Each structure stands twice: as C-alpha cells, then as structure tokens.
Amino acid sequence: MQHVAVLGSTGSIGTSCLDVVAAHPDRLQAVGLVAHRKWEVLAEQARRFRPRWAVVSDESLRSSIPAGAFGATELLFGEAAIDRIASDPDVEVVVAGIVGAAGLRSTWTALEAGKRVAFANKETLVVAGPLMTSLAQRTGGSLFPVDSEHSAVYQSLQAGRHAEVRRIVLTASGGPFRGYTLERMREVTPEMALAHPTWAMGPKVTVDSATMMNKALEMIEAKWLFGLDADQIAVMIHPQSIVHSCVEFVDGSVVAQLSPPDMKLPIQYALTWPERWEGISPRFDWTSPLRLDFAPPDPEAFPALKLGAEVARRGGTSGAVLNAANEVAVERFLARDLRFTEIPQLCRSLLDAHNFEPSPSLTDLLRMDRWTRDEARRWRPLERSLS
Image 1 (cartoon, rainbow, N blue to C red):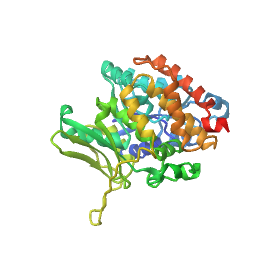
Image 2 (tube, rainbow, N blue to C red):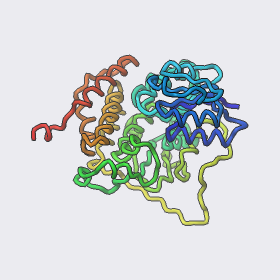
Image 3 (spheres, rainbow, N blue to C red):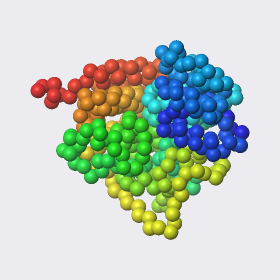
C-alpha cells in the first residue's frame, strides 16, 4: 500500500490524482489532502477518502468552517501544516500540485525528508532546478514528473542511455491561437485565451498554453530534470496532443510516448513507477484512422519560447524572475489590465532589469521572486506610458 499526500487536491491535477487513487483502493491510499480556500470541496474529498489529515492553507478560514465538516479527518491550517504532512514518515509519495511559487516550499520539505515527489508545479525546477535536484541526490528523495510532456520524455529515455541522447522534443498543442500572426494576437481577450481546444485546465495554465509560456517553462524544467543542455531541447506544434513528447538518439532513432490526452495516465505512472498498473485513462480506437500533424512554432507570434531557451541557458536567478513575472502578467491579463501580447513583454523587461545572480541560494530565489512580483505589478508598456 502506497500512502499518498496530495498537495492541491481540489485542483485539476489533484482531482485526477484522486481518481487514480480511487481506482486502486488495494494499492493506493490518500492519507493527506491540501487545499488553499476550497474547503467545501476538500471536506467532500475527506468524507470520501477518509485521509488522516486535511489542510486548508488559508488560515483566515479557520473560523468559517463548521465543526464536524471533515468527519474523523484531522483538520489543520497554514503552511506549517503542509510541511508536517509533506515530511511525515507515514507518507511515501507526495503529489506536488500546488500551482505557483507557493508550491515551492512544500516540495522542498518533501525532498528534504527523502520522499518520492510527483510534481506538477513547474516552479519546482523553473525557479530552483539545481537546488532541488542536488537536494534529492543528498537525501535519497526523487522527482517524478506529472506533466504529460516530461512524463513522455521520462518514459522514452528508457530506450537508451543518457549519453546517447541527441535531443528531446517537447510537443505543444499550439493552444487556441495556432496559426495566428502577431498582429492578430494583439486583439486576444481573456475569453478567447481560456478556450483551449484540447485540455481542460485552470485559468493560469490555460493562458500559459495560449502564450506558449508553458512550453518555455517546460524547456527550463527539462534542462534540470534530465541533465541536458538548452540546445538539446526543441519544441514542435502537434495539435492532436497524442504524441506527448519524444527523444531523438544519436543514431537517428526517435522514441515517443503516445496516448489520448488525459492527465490520469502520467499521474498514475509517477505513483506506480517502476511498475505499470491497469489504467483508467482513455484508450486508442485502433479500428479508426489516426492522423498526427507536426509543425515548428512561429517564434515571432510566440516570443515566450525565446525567453524559455534563454533562461534555460542562463540559469541562476533568471528562472525565478521569468516565473514570477509571468504569474503576475497572467493575473493582470485576466483582470484586463494587460494585453495578451504584453505578457511576454513584461517578462522580457524584468529579465533584463533584474540583478542576475549565477549561483543563488533558496533565500536569494525567494527574495528575487518577491522583487519581481512587486515590479511586475507596477510595470507599464512603454508605448502606453507615452500615450
């Protein structure tokens, strides 16, 4: 029996993870669930899965939750409670699904305790890649990707040795604006950006897919997770989202992982590796035609990709700056305070303006995260400032 803590259990990754847990009640048990503010959903999950602990990270809700709402589950509050669950000896696997830099601390705590961490929060490696991988090596912890792209690379890499890898290719659906020119991008509204053609995700991740910033962040993740040079990481547009990514080896062979788009498959793989169990994800219909299209992305229409490649090469504090700047920029876009095309502009401006440190500590990275957020909230595009 694997005892699992799900951090971010009310989000899309968390609910998919609990679907996997429910499908394997004799092998997986959710012993800890964490949410930020959705305590009613968390309480429903607690009544269904009967975990030992449930945590509401927003302590201001302490007086709002009625007694007995969580049944026999112990209800805790705040970041210290998340750390307690992430490091508890009875927890074997921590699913890190808290979006944003807020998920960084609990991932660190879990790795420090030597846990297997199935991570879906990009910030784990985008912000602190070298520190996280070094910590895992010291403590015996491990990082398993839940993102479909990195899970696909992880699986495909098993076909050869690390020294035999020429490059990895991360696939991207292209979002709702595949084929758009930069001029058309200037007219994009939040409603348009949130209408993803393939995946059902939260608003921040959906906007990242539309700008292709999600792929920029995945390039940075891949560098640290797989120990690659930035020049060994490429991106291709693949609208069907069937090939989730692939690995090209030095002899010219390309090994890919394919499946219908559904997050439960990479989540289950991260929980059960090195085994494969009967899954609950959709299967291919091999009696019907299947078409797979690939095309290179347009770097002018999607400038976020250039930012990702640059940050992957540079390292240091640049990942923390790009991540924080993008988070605030997306918030401002959804609030109609920024245009869609101004999201990468804001990120570029703060990458150029920050005091770069090549070998930062975790404290340095958190300080840079705070500085970037403050600056991103004040940022104004030059052409509008002059008008």
